[in-house]
Amino acid sequence: MSRIGVLGAGTWGTALSRLLTLNGHDVTVWSAIESEVEEFSKNRVHPNLPGMKIPEQMKYSKSLEETCRDKDLILFAVPSVFIRSVAKQADPFIPDGQLIVSVAKGIEGGTYLTMTGVIGDELGKNGGRQNIRLVALTGPTHAEEVALDQPTAIVAASRDPEAARIVQQIFMNSNFRVYTNADIDGAQLCGAVKNIIALASGISSGLGYGDNARAALITRGMAELTRLGITMGCLESTFSGLAGMGDMIVTATSVHSRNNRCGYLIGQGMKADEAVEEIGMVVEGINALGPVLALAHRHNVEMPIAEAVDEIINRGADPEKIVIMLMNRRGKSEREGIDDRNSLGENNVPSSERTGMKKVITYGTFDLLHYGHINLLRRAKALGDYLIVALSTDEFNCQQKHKKCYFSYEQRKALLESTRYVDLVIPEKSWDQKKSDIKKYDVDTFVIGDDWEGKFDFLRDEGAQVVYLPRTPEISTSRIKDDLHRQS
Image (tube, rainbow, N blue to C red; front, side, top):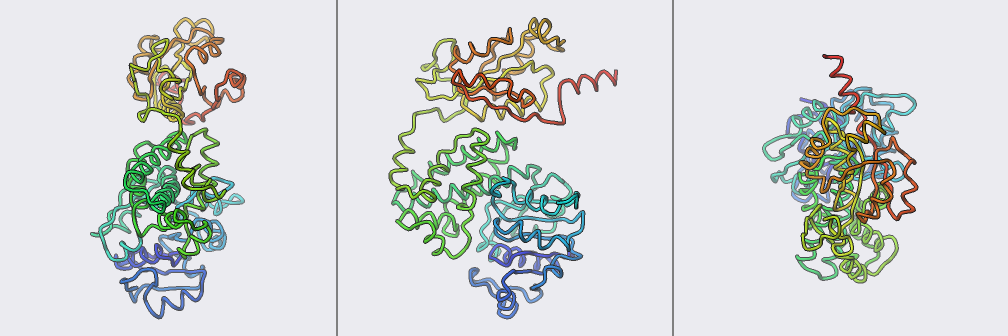
């Protein structure tokens, strides 16, 4: 039996507290609203969870200290906008090394931190606790169904594999299946963005559009989410899993979804604030709009559906006109890197004018291809539809870069071509060819590692976006060669 403190007595906090109690754990629930503590303790029912009985052994408290002190696990189940303030209030009662689970879904404005990031940041202030064990519990889960013991699957995401396994064991039962995932940032990004797409889905239904429109919004919304996540360094597999596609489907289609219902009311003509008041609970998609779009702009990622929702909710745009705008965007390929032979231009490269493709170029030696290289290629590809790699020739490496490669140009080229992210490899023969390459291949975006920050800004004058991507810090070709040299 574990001693668990739950911060938040809303529908999700209550449903999970009941589940944990029935799993045999000692559960204490705190609410900032004292009347809730008194009402739930006495009546043992939650007004927004019909048909559920609160177990007698499940305790309520008005004291944060009582709820947090000497607990094996603390569960943050308050809305995203209150995560930091509650963490600050609970700070005196949380020891270093505490296992903390967050089920809130959102991105904090200004800092652009995930919810576990906010908790870690607040508890680690002034050189404080650096060993808090953080887990995000997220996925396609409606409190209304969990409260009635209907089959549900969810993800415990953490950089700490043991912490994720402990959470898995504590929460899992025959009705509630828990998977683990190391991509805590990707899992939480999914939780924030899917709420925005659910708003779009609801608006579409409110306008009277059918299943075709909803399916298109969900699918293209997933494309937007995946582009942003990969560019931020998250794992692609996360977006096709429970935290990604699973949560997107359930939130964008269900009558239980606050975001979907709020969008529906807006589509029928209500103002956003009126729709939120009608829902009567926090609508996280509206809170997520600003931070998510700020992240998209920071990482140069197109998110037209999210932008459209923002225009409707925050700028009063006419939803029907916004739909027309979305439908009349320039034509483009659905598949990244599609090789449409009927639209090849000069140099055997797809013509941007004919296909609407966005082309990206990057440069490098790519010797001893490793996961740091793959990370860079994956994020570069996510910035467009077609990725060109200008690969340093053996002569250029030797004479101008003063590098000695383990693999020859042809071998390195073959390795790059074998990855799914690279569409074309061209030779890099000099430092000065970048301007001509951008013109020759009609390049939209130039990408390079952030160790070159500022060095290629002049390429913007050629009409290309210039993006400096962060390197994967723990790996480099030089380090691999040094390690191999020491072992020899």
